[in-house]
Length: 273
Image (cartoon, rainbow, N blue to C red):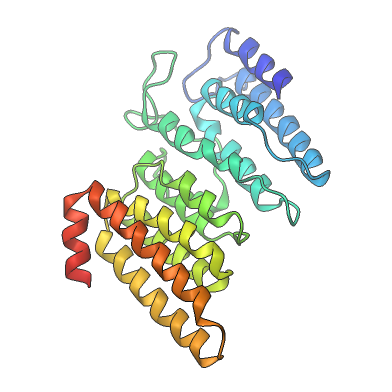
């Protein structure tokens, strides 16, 4: 990662190109950046197979590269980063890779460092887009729609139980739209039903924090229905109720903490109850 960071820094100081990352000559800087990304992610996969976790140095290098590469290449690189997370070996944790998603989205929405417009305004045509990104552009990439496509794509992946809360934590760093929040709440509730009880409080807490941006009523109703289903499941199977009651107590404490942060959420909680 340190070598990749140094290469990205060197490429940042090479002669400029169009803010799309493409020139008639082929957009050499962005193509070289993409190659560095590919080699770095191969290194991450190799380390992952040995049981090593992604480090702050890897995250720093990925963020640096996203700041250097042309905007038109950002969706392609982000697709490779998410794929690396998704293909992690069992028992490993590459969730930290997803922390670059908010930076990548901002990279498209804000003016580029070189002074050219970001792809959120006049924009530039995108050289290539991943399959899951179809519909995010009409000749030009729309950053808001792209964000929704990213959220939908990540929510469609098979999250490992131990990673789920961290994935939600990474996504809630975005300025989520109502559509984004609905997809995230639905996925989180599904994960809660399919994971061990001890993982539920962390997941619920993350989605409650995300709901501070909106859709609080949907989140609260989802939590209530979740525990209705968990109670029916555990009590019908004659399992120990003590663990479930402890989890419910923890979630109630979390609701109290979150409600104190935003008055409207407390009002929504009262209405939902």
